[in-house]
Image (tube, rainbow, N blue to C red; front, top):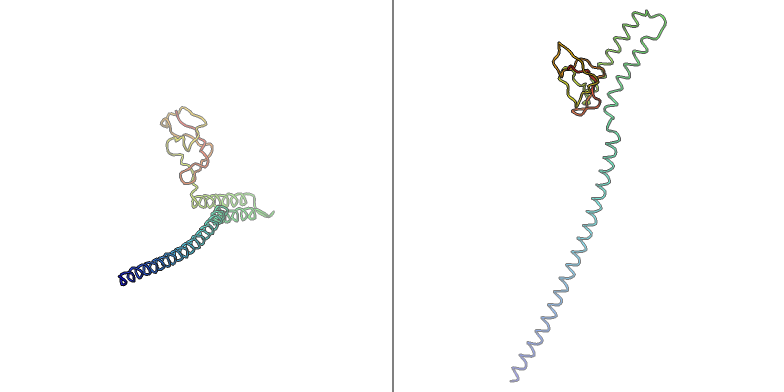
Length: 179
């Protein structure tokens, strides 16, 4: 019987040692999990800060893009201004023949007009066509007339040229339409 008491006491002692070992293992696991949570919180804070920085940078880039959106257009208009200045300079001077001056001025204006239209077309601005049937989306009928030579709904005359940016009207063409 004495041997049985020792075995029971040893079993109880082993159980206490096991409990202490289990508690130590749980504490170690808790420490590991707390460290992992701290690392994840740090990682989250860094990612969140990076996201905020990216958001601010994109906002700044968007503002800059909007602010300077017309830069290419403006650069393409500078040669047109140069041409107009050249035309004005060509008619300065008192020794120029009036007829010759008029011809030079007319030629300069025509070339500048073509250059201006080319620059606009390069940026998606085009004239509204007048040889197509009347379209209320791009034409504004200011008058309608009876016309024998033209079919009803056709444009007879244009008072003011219309323009569109890509497919969106910038200004409607003011036209006369046949009845």
